Image (spheres, rainbow over the protein chains, first blue to last red):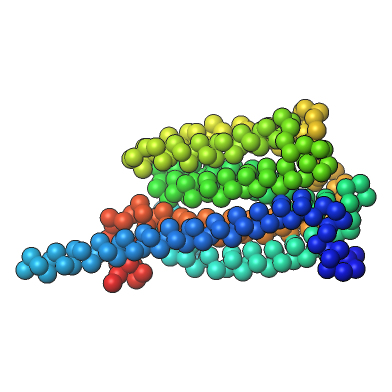
Length: 62
Length: 256
């Protein structure tokens, strides 16, 4: 169907529309799990710090 | 008498047990890689069919290939809304925390799907209709769906007590369900610019078999993707909302 890579990227003259659609979709779909992962890491870090703070509290209180 | 009250013990999976955040959390963690593998497999197959197998369209040339992301994203935006409203409704009826957390976790990915549906639609409308946007029935109702997702997220964020936020946002989600059939049937009810349904449950599809396969594979990819991202997000939400509990303190990833 495609005779050369250039023809593939030209998309029969619709390059702007096809690649904007797929490009933004790929960008959003890759960004989303990265944001979720950083949210997960943030809450795990907070919980760890809380436990650490409690342990110090106990040790100092002795 | 012995038959009473033991019906759930003979099941392979005890679904009632899974409805608690503490038991669901590790299960969700194990399922996530499985869904990512499926996402990748369906995605590669779908993109290959979309760009290298499906023939060029007689009328729209190569520009029609936007369909392979546009239609699956639109399907998922409607489907995720129904699933989100179902979880929200279950949370209202049974007062289970996990149901509300699932609804909360589904809203952002549903909003992204609605956004992608509108975005890819605009980039399809411009070359084919000559306009990025028209106040067509389907476009307008899909825009309202995006606003419903954003309203759901904003309403949750504006209420400090999470249990009250669960209830208020659940009602909003349930009321909004009325919009989903409006989107779906809009091309039938109002004769406007947007073309009719590409795939129908009652008729043979009006397109080449390979085009249909491309759309189905991409839809499966986005479906598995949504499951993976939702499970990731619900795990973060569970930790945030159950931070005070003993079982969270005992988790390996939290212990120092």
